[in-house]
Image (cartoon, rainbow, N blue to C red; front, side, top):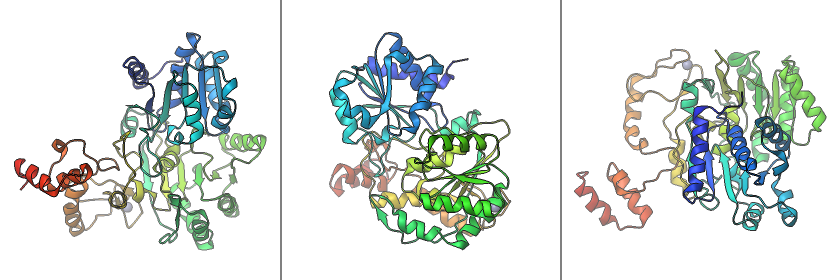
Amino acid sequence: MKTLRPYQSDIVDRVRNAYLHGYKAPCVVLPCGGGKSVIVAEIAKRTTAKQNHVLFLVHRKELIDQIQNTFDFWGVDMENTDIMMVQTASRRIERLQKPALIITDENHHSKASTYRKIYDAFPNAHRLGVTATPVRLDGSGLGDVNDILVEGVSAKWLIEHHYLAPYDYYAPSIADLTGIKIQHGEYETKSVEKALLRTAVFGDAIKHYRQLANGKQAICYCVSVNHSYAMAEEFKANGISAEHIDGTTPKEQRDRIIERYRRGEITILCNVDLISEGFDVPDCECAILLRPTKSLTLYIQQSMRCMRYKKGKRAIIIDHVGNYARHGMPDADRKWDLHAKKATKKQEKQTEELKIKQCPECYYTFEPPSFGRVVCPACGYMFPKQERSVEHEEDTQLKQITGFVLDYDSPDQCRNMHELQQYAKKMGYKPGWAYFQGKNRGFI
Ligand SMILES: [Zn+2]
């Protein structure tokens, strides 16, 4: 049956409402696994049913077939639909059929001038973006390409309502990544590769997989093609069936590997970032993260890839590179803002201090309850009381972090002097302003 889930219908209605209220470019925000593709398909179906043309821009050629299949299945009029790479579309602008709706997949990429060129060529077209993470690598929002965010349900909600599988998160560190160079806002591949291409590191990755997820089908995310090949070889050498795929793997070979994975003949699928954005792979139960990333988007896409819902399933995420410490848990509630500025060093640091506990006994990683003794949910290890009380003091500061961008829209949202000072700083007010406001509000 081709019907949307209630929360998906709600999003479709809200997108329609946004257009009715004069917005031109809403961006739908829904967690990975929430079914963004069928929402888009439904909107495309309604558009094409009125004989209006839809242009769907993708940034990876691997996705074209897949979207075509979803659209076909959903009953979109394909005569009135073009699905193409953004580069292709920008080269053919003059020959494109004039779209009434331009859909941009994974909208956080959309700043590039190639997208712009297409948007500008059809100024009267409605636009629609979709993403799980409406934020760019540098932390800035999508206000330059979208005019309203249409936010759906949260990842936690999807887990609670059995649309996503619950998960266990383990984060045993296996390589020293301190001092890794950063290039264009991301960890530099060569130096990470160097740290990870070590025998001891390989050995530890295998050991932890055996301890935490033995025999379960996994997707292993690596830092480079070299690294991914090497990991696959290492798994095989240890009697665990594994294969590597990447964007250059010939389609037939890739399809064959995916099919063998689907049948359970391959246990571990190693890749760099092919199996991230929208690329459909069969269900699996485990994600192995071996690529440190500064990209929240990449982190969420990779870690949540194993959370497709199946009755009784618990996904296992093994994070060997400390991504949780940079970004929080995959299903953490995040506050999005179209007009978020680039994250400052200070905010990044605060993000790294998000309140997450890791069990020293079993590496289980979790958000502890806000009061009471902390006990590891996986092995029952009791965290020392003292440590808790120290952290509790930090809590009062950390509570101010909503999602990963620290921001207040009005002084009324500030709950103490510190927040007022932050607000004053953001607005460029003099320090005396915060003092005065704080005094009025009884903070001092
Ligand atoms: Zn434990």
